[in-house]
Image (cartoon, rainbow, N blue to C red; front, side, top):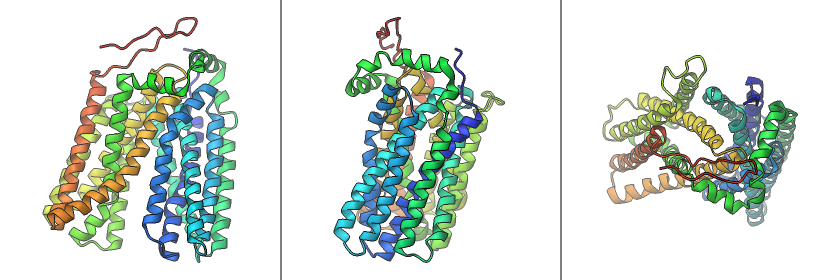
Length: 451
């Protein structure tokens, strides 16, 4: 195939867009959260509901991806998504300020704002991943996924630090100015990064997209989604994404409370423990990036093997947390670092696998497939925090003693990670095969499912 692939310059541009996306989201989900609860003394349930709602809105990701497929270009969806996200961010800051005088109207405006945030993230994030699936070569997918996600994390960290300094001491006027400035800067940077990006794919890529989407132009969204869902590999991977991300997100909100309640950690120590976990995630990401690079060429195991192994290691690390709940002498910090390494390994391997499977569905279907898996991830993250904390509360009510209750919750998460590993192993071994998509000269579908 004569289609030129993206090099590192184009991948870094995509990483900057992902960083911009993360920069706007982190302010709405953390900074505004704190202002609502602390400065405005509103119930913590309100920001919790708004964050959960922005995940619920992301169930539209398959439709966004389908729109990018039919339009044959991802750039308009990424730029449009970033603009909608920026508007939603400014409206969310305005709604937070309004809550001080009119809580009801401010909350209603915040509901609309977080709807826009969810729509913006869906349009931009889904199209970005679809473009990566189309244009990043296989040997570069794991390093590219690591680069893009590390840049997003960097966007989180830099934005949180800069915005924290700019709004201290807090005043409503400063919050609105900083929010508006951030939205303008991220929109401009996204526009610069997108300038001519898809032209780098060359005319061969454009011809391939046109041929691949001739039939898709005649499909409606329901038909396209059904076609993707009938692919056994796509369906199995959807369940894998939901199950693994549910386990991952469920642990996120109870790790620090567990360390404080059972091991007597101070707030500062639990924050440091969370930092150790993030450091482990970074190590796991870099390990998979190295294993999937062209220089190593599979000598350290395939990306799919790392996906299975990462889930198994996550299950083992979560069993370790069960032991730490029952034994004060357990090395909790080392266990948390190991958990982070395992989480980072399977998540990056899963993203690289996602890009591979999106391309295997035939040209012109990458966005719809990415949207389906993005919706599964959003649903898992929306439910994960709720189920993790709810299971913790239920275990405390039924079992009474804190250590046993936390051990029961971590045991449930270990089981989910183990089930995720089993699903990943099915994909790796070829037990689940994809539905071949074959086009003749008139682009009519000829293929069927293989046993």
